[in-house]
Length: 360
Ligand code: KG4
Ligand code: ZN
Image (cartoon, rainbow, N blue to C red):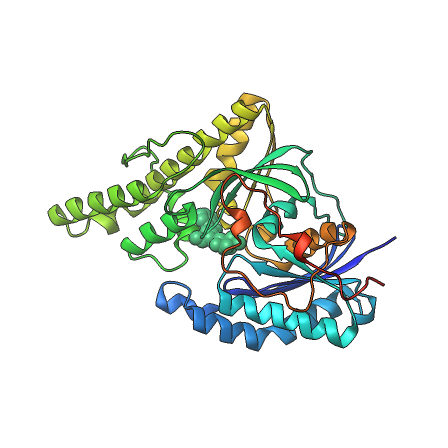
């Protein structure tokens, strides 16, 4: 039986809605919020207001582009967390309203599961490569850096995580000290293409196991700039490309080291990346090169699935729908989903959820 899912994503600063039929994407509309650029980071209250303004036209456009009426939708999948509570509230409340109005069941989705399951979406005109279970996914975004062992669409375990900053945060914070605009990751990626990745050396973490740390690198980057600028006020401007290339090279090699270790430990050689930083060209090239050397099958997401989007939420929602995991109308957003802590399963407590809207 065909299943049509409307996905809604509002965890941070992108308002997005998508329609998925089984695993084929019919539409994926994203309204990004330019309002944060001038503040150099996401301002939560402004994000909530922008979601409030955007959500109705975004959902309406997604349904129209898909050629789907609300009566054709089998379930509404929405992001419950993790994310900014004020942002999440807009998507969760909108999903509830639509659910009541149309008598459509709701399915809650963990945003991080969504990023990982974006690897199972197909496009109307072509199928995309999908990893086989079990696989490892390096999930790298502005808020998270994790190695996740994925045993099935709904059984995932975090086997390594950052103990301080996320990789995207390291890109963004270092960009800020160079005076680059927010978000700094894509800007560094672009400038790095002109620079020498070996020009500067920055501190690398010495952490046991599969965990990451990026705060030492950030401090080392800051001290290098401080010392060099003291001797030459034009230093950043003159060496910007080399600084970006060396920083990117260091972040990518830190990410890859632990991923190689995780693959050796688990024996898993289907390796995927997901999240905003998975758009980074250095990381994409690095994973492919490492994969060639080690006999991995590597899975890089389409660029449109690297940043936050509702297509991935609809995909994860589709798996939960098939598994009969529905949400009740008392569901509330969670800034941090406790289930995401290390070693525990990435699973929303389904035993607590009673179905009060039956599937059609
Ligand atoms: O997944 P995402 O869109 O939002 C979060 O859930 O955090 O990730 C945003 C992060 C930002 O830190 C941004 O700088 C980073 O992804 N990013 C990149 C690139 N594109 C986005 N970092 C490095 N290189 C890129 N090309
Ligand atoms: Zn994200």
